[in-house]
Length: 616
Image 1 (cartoon, one colour):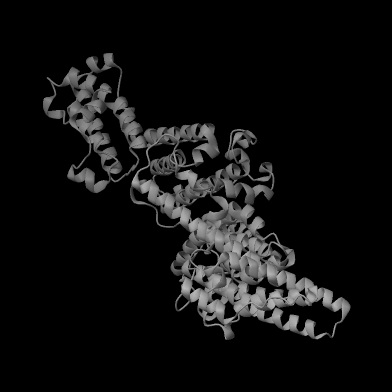
Image 2: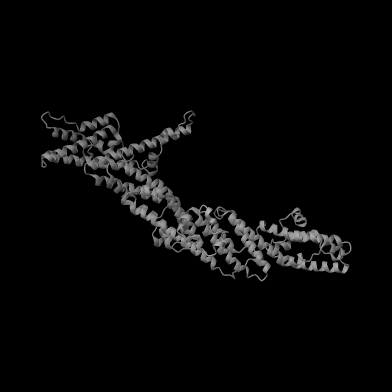
């Protein structure tokens, strides 16, 4: 505590010599009680007058002798009582003038002591230490009833105990001085000293948190990458600012100025108003900038943060004098909500406006619109709690067009943990599927249209299963769209492989065929199979959960029936039979991996996998 002083002599000889330089005067028996009181005050106050005592210049009253510090404060209180009595008797008496002069000297000393306590204990009175002192229990928290105390626990306990002790002593001393100065009519001087020092600590704390108190013009000119980094930093800083920085200042202010509600309120407002208001204005400034769907997630992060810390914000900034801080936090909260709703609408519009004739994926694969949209919606599902609040004012679900497309029953979403979110996200998926229907029509080959729809819907269902969407949309939604995938896949098989599948005859007919008829059958089959394989060789089905069932289904419909014909005629028509059943299975197993992979023969399937297609 004496870190700001040149030295802090504590030897008896120095103290005694100092006291001898200002000897206490023994009150004369003929003095009145008022004169005696002033005489005692004069002895105590002049002893610690900086101008008359070298000892008083270089040390702190509260650091040197706490017992004497308490006596000093009691002396000032008695002097104040004496002054009140003198005013009531003779407001122009010499005794009153002397008492007033002594009071001024005493207040000057206490101002110095107050400043020194605040300055020399910055580390022990930082908001984190103050919060710890207020909220943590005693050092017994480190103890265990029956466990031996190791060195680390002892050191931690002793360290915490010392920090807590110093913090509590400093807080107690500050409060005693503040009460004395306020009761003596020097509240403005006390508040000014306190506010200047503690405001600098708050401002420094905000700076150390890396929060730039930016203006709207500065934010509006930032590139998104830079602004996003600022938002991330703001999110990290907000928790510390609310739970530690401002909370600690509130605790300290309430303690030091506990004797005066008006003083502690005005002090806290002076210290925190500007920094806190600017901190909470940041999200509002962000929402005023250019909006785009990809910014929605940072908006939701900030919205959730303010929501999470709102109880602390209300508690810490409960004074009327800091109502502007609460108002600013609430304004940012509302603006973020509005911004999220706007960006959701803009995202839906972006999906709807995607050009139908935009570049289609080669091989009827997954469209970039599907990839981007499902990634966006999946990420949104992580914010279902915040979205539930934001969307609570949306129109009732029944008012959504084509709501029956979202759920089998318009009210079947009501089991969801956030019905409004479930409906909104399901509707966004419907918008995507409607757009995909239009894109599928751009394929000249109808079979490719169905394969395109199957692959893209499969990707959508997979995205639902691997995210919070599975809980928001429910198993019924997933089952419904899995049935649609099977329907699309079945339609693809019929159109793409129908001629191959319908070329087979009954088993008895295969044996009764004439040699010419059998030759013609194999020629036709070879032609149809070659054409189908060539046409489908460029098709891509990225998801094995769709690719494998389709290949298995095609193989089961072709290979076993072909085997019957093959077994019946292979001895007579060997040179007309190009494919063994195994060959069909191998070619089918290489499908849907992409044209280049199929042509090169590169495949992830083993021989056993191929035999599975062959034998079903």
